[in-house]
Length: 403
Image 1 (cartoon, rainbow, N blue to C red):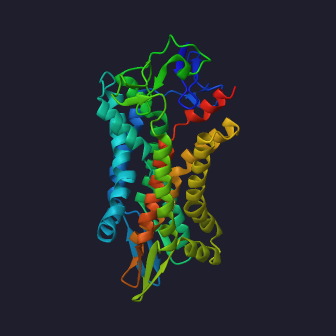
Image 2 (cartoon, rainbow, N blue to C red):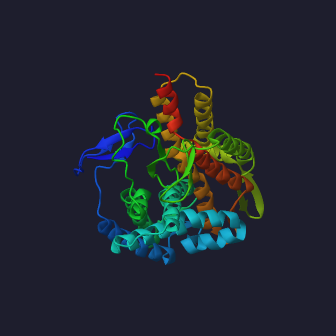
């Protein structure tokens, strides 16, 4: 039997010996404590190195081509870098981090740690892996490609090349590696948690247990603020100034949300005549063209999801701050939904990037990103940071105090 501290509700739980196919969840809040399958580091490393090689091949392979009225325009991943650097360099940096550097760093570290299992990584290595693991968005990029293709299907013929199919396979392999090799496995190589003297069924805060939000290390401490013995971060009973930080980030996201929906997200230039369209106009245009699926995807990802995240986090903040009597499990479910859907709002950003890169038809038709897409991209990241600053254990603190 081993004991773990639930990161969601702060309950100490005893886990039975590992048995393949059986997952362990927290009996209090339902959080996953141990997955049903624990793949060996070597097996994950084999898939990771294969995915890494596949990624390098994808970059230089032709991706897709569209043709209309005898004019053809092709796309490769290298061409996206070139066009973004010319149009919006800030978009290029975001695109490179979430679809290129972060995935490749994750795969490199998984491969190295899997093949050299006796190597003890540094704290900086674990921090880099945790950051890159959180911001791998290749799967969102592939969804953006599919949405872009549906949007373009009414305007031109599409042809797929090797790069497209290889990138699709790469995204599946990367997603598998990220699921099987979560950051806690890297942190455990540095130092494993030891709370075997803790009482199961009792919350950590009642046993002077602290949980480091940076590396997930639980440890005993009587101090109000202490230093994590694994990563050296400052650790308090709960995230310091959680309300101020989360609310400030939400206000920033809300301020940026307005121009992201008012100003054009992209400009279309046809025969030297330029016109811009914001998100709502794009949804209406897709609906009028009978592209109902694309219209609904963009409406959900670009309009409903960002505003839902902002309103949901505001609701959670004030429910906890004002101690409003609401079922803790309901608030927890809302918070976890916000965490899950946070990254998928980037679909619209990738749609604009892809369409700006592929639609360059001999000067007859050109699509360029607008200022609003920068604001929208910032909204996505600010809401992600806001959700991360909130301490989920606070929801259960109030529930426990009311008993």
